[in-house]
Image 1 (tube, one colour):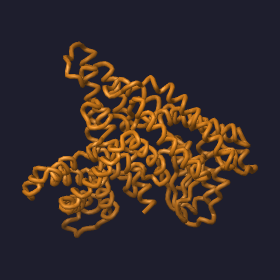
Image 2 (cartoon, helix red, strand yellow; image 1 turned 90 degrees about the vertical axis):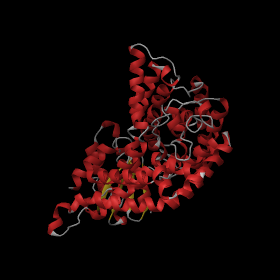
Image 3 (cartoon, helix red, strand yellow; image 1 turned 180 degrees about the vertical axis):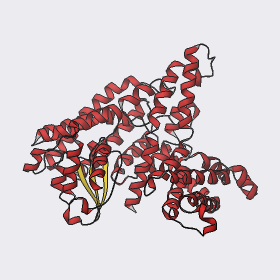
Image 4 (cartoon, one colour; image 1 turned 60 degrees about the vertical axis):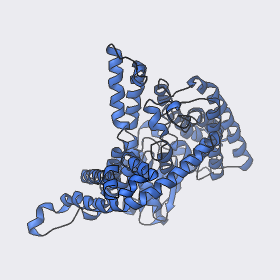
Length: 489
């Protein structure tokens, strides 16, 4: 189950990776044409150009469920074949049509008299849950039926051609089940969302804490869908980039995103500096955490930093998650509001500053300085007081001195060393990768040499199960994966 959820998390990153272009387009668009969301007159080339860009970005934001359906369909397919995407799209079209309010109230007239159920079915076709569900249906049908052989007179529909047909039939059954199950699911999500909203600033901090805490098992994506997208009527990200303001919604718009900016841009840098100052092997620590801190500051990708210590010093990772919660409470209370389309880095901060819901973005400076100082002090104290094994404080060996530095782009050498540490190509059953990690299935866990793998300069090694290994490489993981795939052939 854990492996399946991790693969689902990786699949969601494919459509999420499309959102930055949406943020760039809409950020520039609002800067050029503030009247777009203010009901003013749009005259002149610049205003019309801005309006054009806003609508271009909205084309992605407004269709997140479809992106999720296709992304999950392809990502969960055994060989990432495009037929799985068609299968997922067929499922999405079938489910959203059959579960639309008009169809449901025609088949079940009693629903029309139940306001809560009517709202639930109004939301179903447009939320991320539907996209993920139909993507899973599409991929499962593809994996199961892609090799189906039919009788000669139906041979045309054999193999991959039958996948979309089966997906449609399964989706009809799924839609019938959703008639009864979806109102219950939606009600539970609304209760969770309302519970968090009811806690105000403390609720936003609780969300941020849980968001970081769930990263090791990849379940933070599910939590994000509740608060960032319009799954339960919240949709902090959706409404923020849709040009709304806090006056248009029932919460302080941006409160579930803003707290990540000072933590990711500055807090990670402070924590990284603490790791360097407390390291025994400072060159090893600098090599890992400096690039990770820069990555977090610029684009908000924090996994290269987090996976460098979350399993060697789990207590410190819990403290790290708590700090996110604390600073999210603070940013909510002081009125700093910013949003992201990808993650809370400087890039998204700049482009979100011109959106109507953005407030006091200049406060990123004092908040960032405070985050850097607090993260530094807390991390330095915890590392030294509890002798935590952060980068550069692990037992040193000769291989560590020969680490391959990924920034040199010597991906072939990195892949070679990692493969040797995995026990050679004969010991690798399958290879995949997400944004920052190599995900591998192995035949014999006793042949895995973690020290050898780490000597390649990677951030860390995870062993989720007996026959699963994850190698945390960083944002250049795709290049290492490509080289390793060549070696496995």
